[in-house]
Image (spheres, one colour):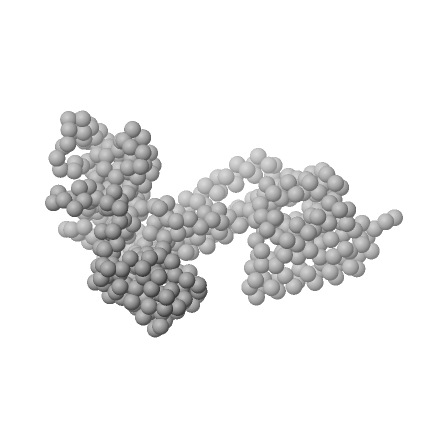
Length: 496
């Protein structure tokens, strides 16, 4: 009887030392086991190192294994566990079914699953779903960790920032030679006589290389002149990752502004002067909409369409100029798409003072030991989820029971995670609960999760879910229609 041709697949997701040991162990294990098994003809090990298991087409050795299977060079594939093989449930099942159709078995040793067995698919589906969920949870934990560092004011930057030395995503020291160039760029622009294009040409004529080598371009100069890091501050989370793609943060995520986070290269007066000149040179239609961080940036949500509110300036340059917040959807597409009310910055500032003072009088404080209690609850929920999965894999509960109980657990896990994140975000002490007389940006960010505006009613949602609302006007009633809408909003709020 001819021996079946067997191959093994191994994978580790990073190049770290611990993962390197795992990779070597997997390689040695399969080589020894299958080489000495008289049942099989061992054709070799296919192993990907330092590659995520989420997508098969990004793993060259995995694709080579699939090619060998299709060519008839492999009859059975061994792998340590579902997590080593794939972490994308849909893709996992597609691959297994494809191999099954040509008579090739995949044997998952840890889960004791042979994909040629009739009842293998249900167990494989459960195990693959758990593996994928673990990956999502890990990704969420990494994202939460980064977010938590942002909230605590810890600065995370890319590997290169012209003018500074950077190590482990942190600014360490000033680079003296590059800092001279940075100062020269700011000083030349601040005279009002040089454009970003002219400064780039001047640098190239002198043979000064750009940050990553090569020649300077005017967009690089503009980006440098707008970068708050050169005055010693840092705006965190300008970009974010979504499905593996880097995106510019346009209000989808919270931003955090840290003052005096590191040593500046230019003084604040020079930096502000440059901003004024750049704003003045901007198209007049865009004046008042220059990217800038305001206290409520990213916090105000439209109660009509769900879009974020954007800061704008009405009557820019005139004596009755006013700072406003308006629904971005309404600004972009007009009031027929979203007719929600805007709000003056001075009005929302004053209303926050009122609602904050009402909030602290209500005694809404975090309980001592609450963070520890929630963490213990979360740990127990994770254990319950793992136990439930094992019951399903062993056939002790049916698929419907498993899905119903797992969904309930996941719902409870998400709710507990949110409560824990809220507490860790605030880090509030009894001394923080003090009344204020004027607008306090720090209080806003420490106490308020989001702000909702709906037809002349502004609602502040505090960190523990408490909502406090106020009706408002922006001064002059404007017209009869608006006045009636405001009156209606007041009546509805008064009637609960």
